[in-house]
Structure formats: structure tokens, C-alpha cells
Length: 343
Image (cartoon, rainbow, N blue to C red; front, side, top):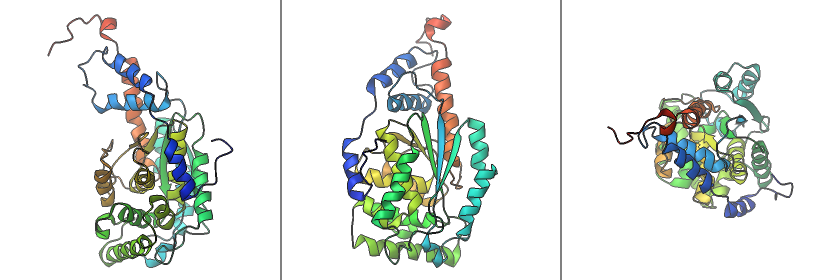
């Protein structure tokens, strides 16, 4: 990003959203032109064809490239865990980052399988986001720091960016932000997360409802709600999504937490997520509801709820398959096929 980028605040981010680039229609038309000549009925590869168009359109070039793929996992802690909303203590966040560094997590295996570079971003784990039932999760300065870290993570030259998170308590933050942005009942947005049920799940839902009641009295502005309810890793994901758009980098979003972080941008400026695809629908119930509200179809539905960009990296397989078919299949002329209208 240019060094003159203004300090990130909800107001300055809104300004950046006013001048977003759009997809390159010439590159998309080149994809469509070749698709029409490939040895298959029109549209027979379904959403794989759309993935190739999406990739070329947002990279702004033809043919699309898949040389430099990166997965960024942002990690943060949440003061709201003091209410018993998670089955695990906040110390697990840093322990899992150690597991990532040692190569022992699912996302490590997936990144190796699909040739994706993994980077992790611990965000002040010793200073959890404030308990949002008592006040905003982040100050203006903390919001700016986290958002800017996310923007810096979307480096120039990346062909495809996978975004994910790690943070004990962050499904509570995600549910609160979704409830604040899209309404409905707190219970509909609030699921088991790391595995809470019974009275602990009921308490988690009460925490979400209480936090949203408090902050919706102060603002309805989506990015300020992100600051008040989201925490550091959600804010960083939103920053990475915006920076990727400004640099024409296509993005694969992981599960519920990643999607609602990005959805704050969409709520502030419809169309802000056009360069993104949601990799999978999480087993966390709020994610399916969120995708319906956004009018988005996920690429995969495998009952996953791990986070850590695992679903986003897994979806890289589909993108690679789409490009391989598009560029590697023979055309009708290549194959000497003349009866294109056969059943």
C-alpha cells in the first residue's frame, strides 16, 4: 500500500471504500472467449468456470496466475471469555500459534498440500480486547493499529489470499457483530464455538444480546460496530480484505468469524466484497444465516468449524482445478471436434 495511507479509523476506512476498483471486464471476456471453445458443453463445468472468471477479473490479467498464494491467520484474545463463553482458556490462542510454527496444525498440512505460504499474526495476545459488555472492544488507536496490520499483510504480488483467524472467544465476538449488523435474535447467531452447550451456551447468548444492546445505543455505523464488538483479529481481517481490493488481489474467506469481519465492509459499502469468495460454510449456525443475509453461496459445505484458514486453503484446490481445466483443456479446433451441438 502507498506510504501516504491515512491512519485507519472507522471514518478514514469509509473514505477508502468510496473509491474501490472494479473487476477487469476485458480479462473476464478473455476467459469467456476461451471457455466457449473448450471441448465441453457451454457451462458444463459450472462454478469452476465462474471461479476462473473471478480470478482473472480481479487479478486484472489473462491468463490468471496461481504462483504466489498466501494464507494469513490473525490471532487475538477477548476479554469477554471472562463470562465463560468458551470451552477453552485464552492461553490456548498462543499455544495454537506455537503449533502453527511447529507445523502441527491442520492448516499447515493443507498449505503444504496446495502450495500455499502460511503466515501468522499474533495481535497483542497479552492485552485481550476489552469485554464488550462493559465498553468497546478496542479504542480508536487499537482499531487503527489492528486494521493497519491487516492492510499490510496483503502484500503486493500475491495472486490469491486466504484469510483466517485464531482466537478463543471470537465466535462470541462474531455473533455479536452479526447480531448488531443484521438484526434478528441473538440466539440465532450464537452457536457452540469451541463446544459449549446447555447453560454455558445460554449464557453466551445472553452475553451477545447484552453487548449488542449496549453498543447499538451508541452507533449503527458498521465499522464502529466492528471496533466496539469485533476485537483485533476481526479488525485485521477487515483491513486485509480492503487492502486486497485496492491491490486487485482475490480473496478466499474462511468461516463465520472471517466472513462477518469482512461483512462489516459490505455493510458499510455494498459491493465491497465482490473480490472475495466464501470458501466454505461453517458448522457454526450463524455462518449459514450470515451467508443467506449476504446472498452468498459458499464453495464447500463440509461441516467444518476449525477456523485457522483451513476451509479457505482447502478451497484453493477448487481454484487450482478451475484454472487447470481452463488453460489445459483442448479446444474444439485442437481436438478436431466439429459437431458441437451433439447431445
